[in-house]
Length: 372
Image 1 (cartoon, rainbow, N blue to C red):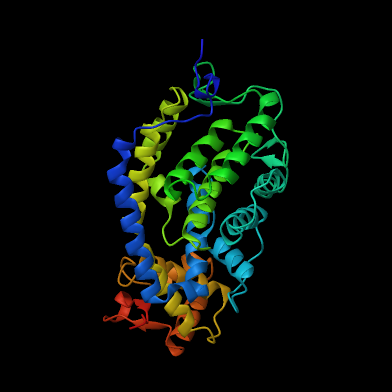
Image 2 (spheres, rainbow, N blue to C red):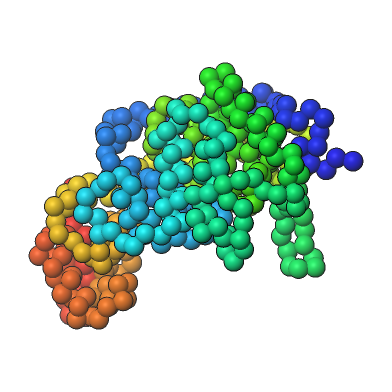
């Protein structure tokens, strides 16, 4: 009796209903074309600051899907270090964050390089620099062992098995098949469909003890980068998955327990992709605003504490920081005294980084001096 898709005799010969996907696929390619036109018109492809903000957003989102919430400032600091941005108030390095950034940068910046077994092992090892996943030691830089690999939820004693991956002994051959298809399929099918199949196929093999979801999304990004011939994503598929996480796991489980027809997965992927492109307007607007702000203040002396608060205001958007920035809020965010907070706010006012909002006395508050 077969329970999972990889147990089917013709695995991994996927099939799907073209009539069910043709309209949404056309919509995806049209929307993406429009987005690339806007990117070119805005000159974003030449902005290192914009690239840094987009990469930081993707690192935060792909980790959040796995329940790992990273410190945005630490992520920005690590991204800036990788991209060589000057005077960014660098914070101490976090090895996990550095690893995620290395994987995403390698997958997209080096999209033209072959995807090899050595490269996959290197990516997985980069995600677990200590050799531990949480409190558990895991195999890093090599495939999982012979123990059954199951996706489980629920309390102990009442667990529900959502999926069981192929036996560990089969993994090397399964990954070899995948890598051969990866090489042979480039340029022979629609790039978005190829990205959808690649992500589904890899996470279904589940070749490692941990990190498979993050690696599948990196492979998806690499496939899209190859199709677009661009090293930077101007939309975040991971951010959209966060919004649709329940549906993501449901359709994944349905197709992994189904036959080789993956129409349901492709329809969901394409719909999610289209929504990610639609959301890109807000992302691009935020990225451009941040990039423009830091370009203006590239020579302004700003401490790491001040930078942390400024980024919080930038994240909130113009007028979006509820109640405005006050000395009390500044002190709370930076864990310093109100007196020190007041001095640092005054310094930013003198440098025209901050502007005082209307109001006096206890109601005084501040906002950024936003670029016009």
